[in-house]
Length: 125
Image 1 (cartoon, helix red, strand yellow):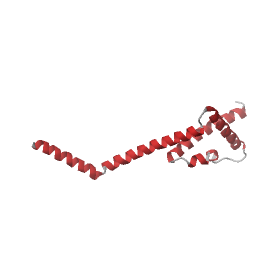
Image 2: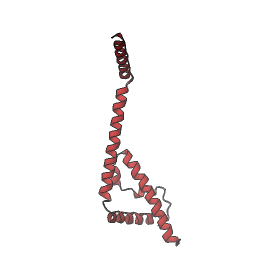
Image 3: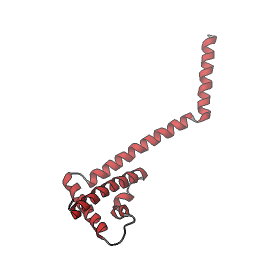
Image 4: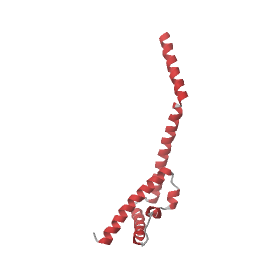
């Protein structure tokens, strides 16, 4: 019996230490952060589905963006921020911080593809 009481005291002491050290607050904040990440992914996927629900609409958006890229590259002035010129402000403002980062990264990848297409078509390579 004394052995069980000693074990119980030890477990109680450890539980008290976890409370003092903020263990449960850390667990709670981690869970909240994970749920925020999941919510962000869901919102971003929803936005993506809304703006590109099928291949034809995606290609229309790509062609619009390609025209913008052509205008940027054809202009005589040096474009210091071509990605900033391609951003759809309405979509961008509706995203959270993580969604904005993903949007910018995807937009920069698309810009590189379209820029390569532009140079292939204009140089005949």
